[in-house]
Image 1: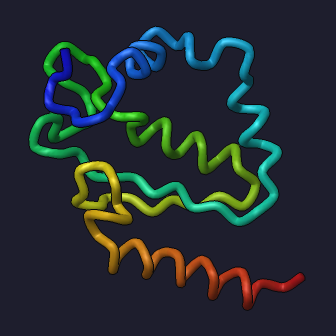
Image 2: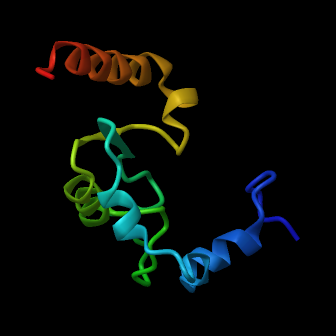
Length: 115
């Protein structure tokens, strides 16, 4: 039975909750090997989770919280953080102008960076 999450497969969410999605996959090692300039775009907590990303039971209601996002940025050699987007989830769909602005900033930074 779906819970109003549209076409989202709830079984997929369970694998994130119990970490079985990552069985045999070293996420930290993969992130360390990314060579391209990378931006982690992170939405702000929403009305269900504010002021943080957790519910009243301490359950994370997002892919990552601020600490997780910063850890990703720290692991990716050319990683940068862009956060606080007032978006439900899909920044590109909810806030297309802001999304494009972040990408254009990345483009400009990579074009002007010394090689």
